[in-house]
Image 1 (cartoon, one colour):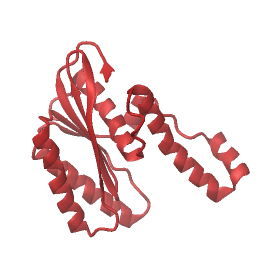
Image 2 (cartoon, one colour; image 1 turned 90 degrees about the vertical axis):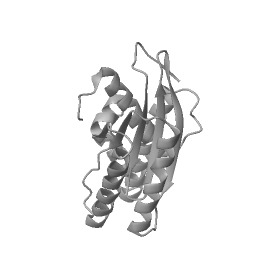
Image 3 (cartoon, helix red, strand yellow; image 1 turned 120 degrees about the vertical axis):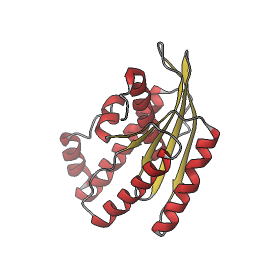
Image 4 (cartoon, one colour; image 1 turned 60 degrees about the vertical axis):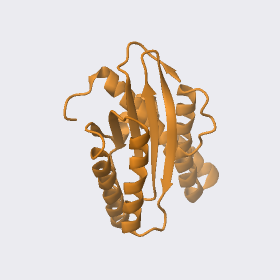
Length: 194
């Protein structure tokens, strides 16, 4: 539960889509507080694209029928150097957007830097990377940096919302972070047609 001043009552869905999964969070904002109502995750590993898209098409209507969603915020995909992964990510992200727009008029993409900055995420520093490389070696240092990036978001959302320490999946915690950004965006006054 989050406390806030004079918000507009609404329900938002936040989505973190990757080439291997789709995670969502649902927030219900009332006059005196906001509740994290639900989280869910689809695992899409090792499936043909047509199966992934069909699963996504069946997944989202469940939540749109359960909640009267006013706004959807989807993490904007980022360019990945691997062309195959970029293609899969763009197909999944596009299908998520297309599916959500069938149920909600207010669907927006959120750049990763925007929501991470909003929640207070700090990048892994060059000094940290250098220290880990000297202590662990190049290969293990890269693994440590990747793990630390994921753990930082988890720690931040746990600090911001009490009672969710059981949520330790980094994709779900990313969806929660996107949702926190989305709530702030709505409360500041979301421009028409965004």
